[in-house]
Image (cartoon, rainbow over all chains, first blue to last red):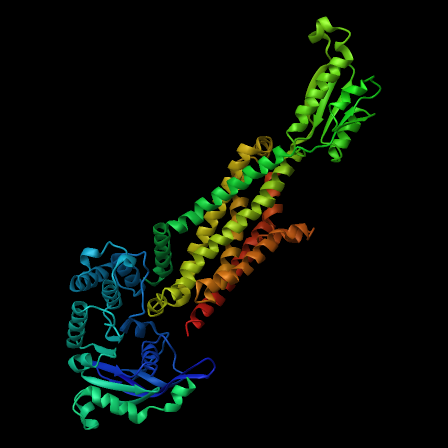
Length: 250
Length: 372
């Protein structure tokens, strides 16, 4: 379980406040969708949760213990994937699995077992000896996903993982997310696709202008604003909490 | 398991190098070709200069004034063979024709002479002179009574070696440094700055391995690659000299002694240079997240390396022997004269190692800091 309390992050000597006050709770065995307009602070929040960024203030607790970004044990528990993350283009999927598997201190047997399982699921096996740079966008994303999940993490953070992918690849990734959830993993998913939230997510967190304005189940979201859909509820929350001033400043 | 992280990163970096043809070409072929080209160019320049200073030392021999009209470069001088040698050694004359009793000598110093025309002209003049001196009286037995003509190279082995060393350690040495530096720039901007530009950095940061270990692995591979580039450059320089400066090269072969005598010093000094170059360029590369910016600032690294290489021209002190890169020329000359002192060479290697360590610490902080 991840508990985020009053998280704040500033850049450029406090001149830019990307995240102002975010508090969320994400349980094990659930898919938690993080929603918010562009520039709301979703990615920064996810980068802090994944230990890629240190918060300016606030706390992130993993199973009640404060996250230490330098703790290798914590890093071994986390996988972070965005549609921006790339892998070395000269390497083949096999070589990438070997490289990152060793960096995650996996034994050759573990690497082989996990790699074969993931490669088979995502249909990478027949391309395992081709260079990553020669792959299509979808194949690159599937390979990145397989490499990110190679070390069998229990916290999986996905920042818009299905952006720009075809329906088949989207479906494959979504199915895998459900499978991971059933295995008891904690999954945080950031997306703009509200339909995906309705279909996959158990709980939702909404961030507007760097502040968390909702955290609850998908069913609770429309009810909280007396509307019938997630989309309508999201728009209502946005209108209520959006600071016009922030846009002018930006 | 943990102790293998650095080795694993190194193995991966080497795998990348072997797959990237540009990296391989930059590392081995480019230094080889450039040094060979410059060796050839230097040899060519030495032999195509048409201008030279020449003199005829004729003593009291009677000579035909008209003869000299065909050889305007030659000045008539009264003097002995010893004086001719002195004029050549002092650089006032490139080639001298010394006329003595029953003998004409053409003197030159192969370590100083830059014109191939000079000896040919001097030889022609000597033939004409010998005909004038004896031939007109004994025309029928011309071959028998002609004064003996001999072409003599008055340069010593030391002179030849000095010229060779000036070439190999000076201009060609500078080219080798520049090739090593440009190699380091290309390789390090790809493997360190490039991780951020290609957005592969996040995946590395998320691994439970400290960043400094990953950076150290990358630095060690860079060090090996720069070392190999330097070694390729030196081999090319020696090959180039063997083909285009045969006199100096054969002298060198007789002087330097066995491999066991010069190889350790050569390896140590090249390792020191490679460490210094690796330190400078890794530091620059780790401070930027765009390869274009890193390349721009790396030109400052090139200036530092070039400046260090020419330090012996300004500092006439043994202190130079302790400074990495700057000790290149003096140590190389000492190696060829079998006068290598291992203390300054070892100290300079130690300094380079400390530099590498400091660079590692600063670079890993810069690499991580820039991430935000």
